[in-house]
Length: 211
Image 1 (cartoon, rainbow, N blue to C red):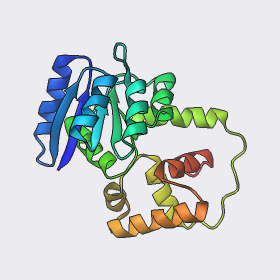
Image 2: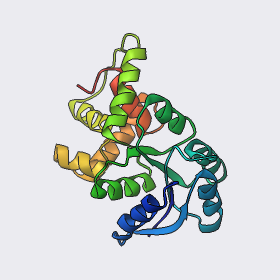
Image 3: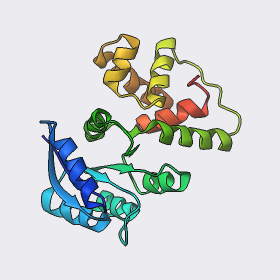
Image 4: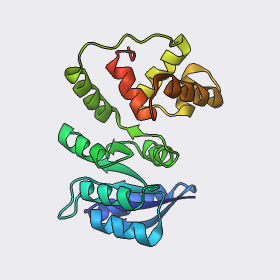
C-alpha cells in the first residue's frame, strides 16, 4: 500500500484528488494539507511514501514544503501536481528536490500511474514540462559530445527514457522484457557514469540522441 499526503490550498481540489486516488486499492490517502508547512507536518505524523504537492500556495508554498520534506524525510517522494509549467516554477521545484512534476490537466489514470512510478523511484515529468526543460537544454548547450559505444537497442531505450517512459512502457514500446530494459538502463548508467534516469534523460537530449 502506497501512503499519500496531498497538499493544495483549494479544499475542493484536495478532496477531489483524494477521491481519485481512493479509487485505486494500491493507494491510501493519509493526510490533506493546505500548504507546504502542513504537508511537512503531516509527514512527521503519517510517514507517507509520496507527497502530492501544489507549487503556488499562500505563505508556505511548494518550494518550502519540498525543501523541508526532502531535508527531514529523504525517503519520501515528492510529486508536484500544479497548473503552472513555466520555467521558473519548474526549476524551483527541481532545485528543491522534487521527484516529479506533472500538471493538473493530466488524466486520472496517468495521475495514478505517476504516483506509483515516483514511489518506485522513477522520475516523472509531464509532456509539456519535459519539453520546456528540453528547450532550455537545447538553447543552453554547446556542441554535443561525440558519444561512442552505444548499441542501437541502448539508443532506443535512451530515447524512451528521455520521453519520460517507465520500464513497463519501454518494454511494451520495444517488445522487450522489463528485466531486459532494467538491465540495459543499469549498464547505460555505469557506462556513461551517470547517477540516475534523470541524468540519462538529460544526457540523451543534450547529445541529440533523442531524435
